[in-house]
Image (cartoon, rainbow, N blue to C red; front, side, top):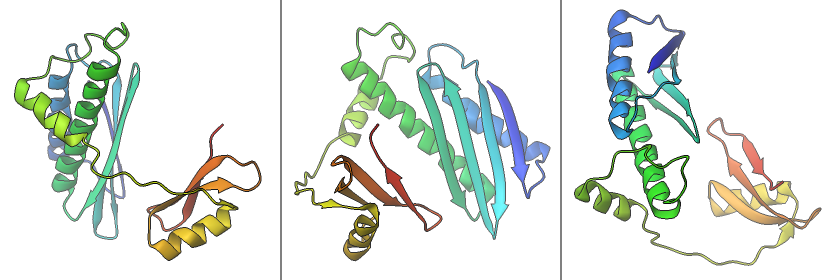
Length: 180
């Protein structure tokens, strides 16, 4: 792994750099060959919150996670845990659905029995909801979402009659997801 570590409102000390390289470098154990792509790490401090963003572009997979905490080292630990969950989830999906795909075959080590059982539990769907899609515009969908107290709302766009999703972003603003 080649690390590209930068700081925003923060000077990167050798100890911090070593900690990031050691923790993020642990992700190598999930892959059968060494990760050759660059690893982009951004460490930032905003109002007593220490944030970490990690992006690892790979062939057929983009790993990206961000985490905030009061302690920088805790943020690094949390973001690595999040990346490990993403890798395990992707690995399970690849093993389950794309067994004959030569692009991803051989990319991961074979799972241990305990690891495979844990991953099966993590992907279990515990609830299903069904509802009618009411045609509305995105502004009305945002109002409905706020009334329900949810973070997202699925609706049928009145203009083009396609399924769309509005969601609340971390910055408090709203986003809209539309199919192409």
